[in-house]
Structure formats: structure tokens, C-alpha cells
Image (tube, rainbow, N blue to C red; front, side):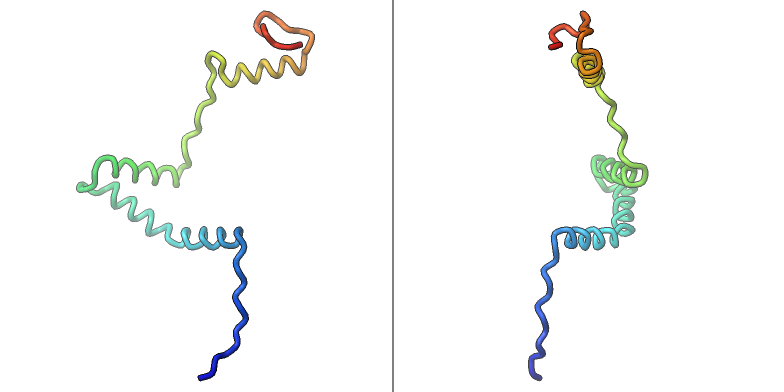
Length: 102
């Protein structure tokens, strides 16, 4: 049989390739969850594997736990407060703002 001319396939763009990868991965979601549940319930799996599987299931079902904002010595909230005071009240540098340029 003679070769039939076929135009060359377009090279997928990076975003299209990522979309296709996500689609393929998502098509295996049910199987992946079942595997994780199997590991979590297995008496033969190591405790670390069981905990890891359980955490993966919870993260996908409920989302990861929000990380608290640090609020201690030189913490994030104190830094935000100091920046705010310097911008809003540049002439009002108090004792708690020592070292700030006004």
C-alpha cells in the first residue's frame, strides 16, 4: 500500500501539554484514592506509609491546614505594623519604633 501523505502533527505548546498531563492524571483519581485507602487500611504496610496515605487522602478531601502567621519577637505582624506606622504617620515615631527612619 502506498504511503499516504499526512501533515506533521503540531507540536503542543507548554500550556497545552500541562493541560493534557493534568487531564490524564485526573482520569486516574479514583484508582489513586483507592490505592491510598488500601495502603492506609493495610496491616502489612509500615506505620509511616499508612500515615502518609491517610494524610494524602485528607489533604485532597479537605485541603491542607492553614499555617499560622508568626507573631513573636521580630515577627511578621510586628513588621507589618511598623511599616504601616512609618507610611501613615512618618512624623510620629514613638519609642516602639526606635531605629525607624522618619
